[in-house]
Image (tube, one colour):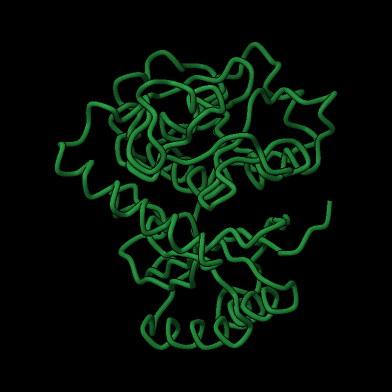
Length: 304
């Protein structure tokens, strides 16, 4: 299979000033190279996933690495046969991943990193509790064997969940994981700040694990949700089997497409009861415009 586009997922925690100037600079560099995707800027750092020709993607990453405090920026690189984004967006936020705890400082302290090659041995130990820090719809399509699902709708709910369940993890090593590592940076930093001593997290996240660990040795089950038009990836970061519902933005399993509640661009089993008839009418018109654009050989931006 021919692989046309380089996809880079990255983040880095470091103090970032001059947000507007940084935004303008990255937009200019990205547009020059026809790079697409989303980059978030906040006083605490940078978080993004972008795609394009590899040299153009590296030009954007080099620009970030050249900023003071960001020389250590790393990224996970994969490939897509088609462009997984419709446009380039560089946005300024309060946080690059929203936890709602202003005292968290991942640039100052985090839990201990565990390399993918050492992860299987760690999570097989009886004194380790394994926690998936992602949201419910992400966990539903794949996770590690034996992982605890906090059943959260958003990362903001994690501190409350931890407070309610902390006694269950006494005298345990707490091992956390997420898609690319960024949520674990904040979650482990927060726990260390709360005095939890034995906190570790998967370096590079699930994506790095799927990239490096052979499927026959893997303890991962299912697919990993990603925040672009690939929807999900599997071992070797190959594109997965899920579609996306453009009404609720949740992943849709292949078998769900045949459910009575599924209507492309309008509804899926997860959101069939969540919207009004007026909402559905808007979604149908949006999907009609998407289909018309596709018939003309164009790409419609609705739903990106």
